[in-house]
Length: 163
Image (cartoon, rainbow, N blue to C red; front, side):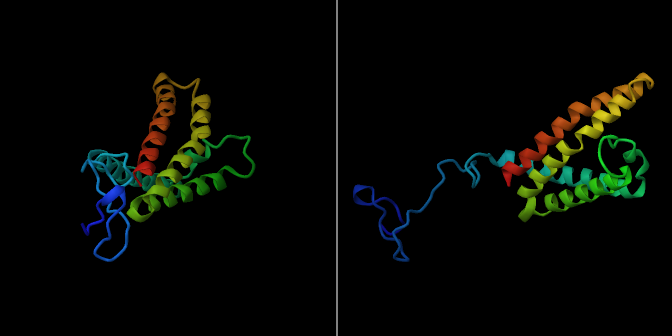
């Protein structure tokens, strides 16, 4: 045998190139290179990466085009001006979007997006608190954002795991 298949006593036979490294064969063609995701899950992760890229790009640009609504979300306990935090989070969103857009950096982009979504969660809490006396429609929006943020973290982690 010259393909690296096990020879006598389980030792790999010499390969054509003379090495004794075994040839790796996947027992299930649906399993990806990491050995944990099916092709369907990989496709879902890739589509999720595209969606997160679009979301983060849009929101990142909006932080610079119309920063006022974002300024209001910055908790007052944070040092510095709200505008600097708004611009900083806009840069972070655009950076995470860029990482997610490229297959080569998608894994780190998924983790960056996940951390970003966790980092801006206090702003969502601030919004829910600030809008507690607003009409019920605004309260519903502010409260509805809280569980949606958890879903964004879950999706970003899916992209990270898929690499």
